[in-house]
Image (cartoon, rainbow, N blue to C red; front, side, top):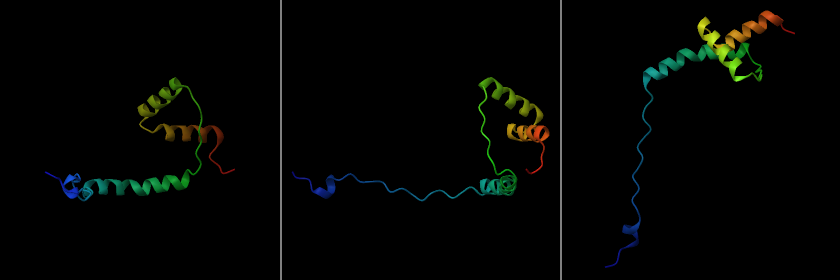
Amino acid sequence: MTASASSAAPRRASIGRKPAIDPASTWVRQADAPEVAAKASIYTARLTIDVTPALRGRIKVIAFERGVTAAEMLRELLKREYGGGQS
């Protein structure tokens, strides 16, 4: 009994088409797009600072309690402390 080369090769299953995007997910993402673009045009510089894990935790908790993001809260703090004018 001899096996031919073609029958010895493993058969690969074909991969089907990528599933279509859920229309509801697309709609949700579209609602967020203009807001993100607007914020990107206002806040174009990124600032990185090192803080202790404890301070980071307190910042996040306080922001959550106020119903804002930590970034929004810190932007307002910096604006209040250093002014909002263009220099």
